[in-house]
Image 1 (cartoon, helix red, strand yellow):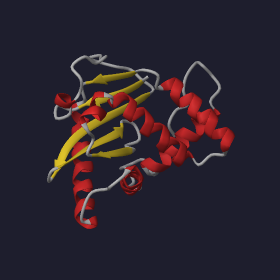
Image 2: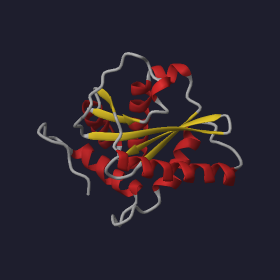
Image 3: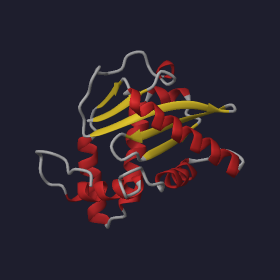
Image 4: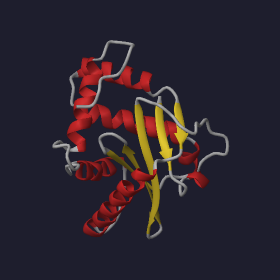
Length: 184
């Protein structure tokens, strides 16, 4: 299951009928935060345990209506890139990740995550100033995400990028149906 904790600024853009739970338990818990930079919309998805962030700029109405598919596709794309596996490893990772993310639940965010998301928002705004504009495509969005994910989270010793790389590499090796590998 893929869980996306949606903040209030994103809710009006989503379809009215969505599967959701007040409290969810999932193997993939992500926090979603939407904000504006000038007249551009940005959505940050942040993995709750590692702090790994994915960026989306200027999503259209149809993208919001199919947010679960948009997120699953990006998650798979980034996992395959970050894991840096051979062809067989990529196939196993894709199979295992798709199994984990068959369903998507939208839930309320925890209050502690809002501060971390606002910190990421400030970093994205600084990147916009530094690069004099927003990313123009998914490749550039991923590149900006790599910059964000290269920062060390307090007390963890490894960057969010490194933690997710290890997780996705472990997921490629995962054979058990009992539970997913734990983050390092």
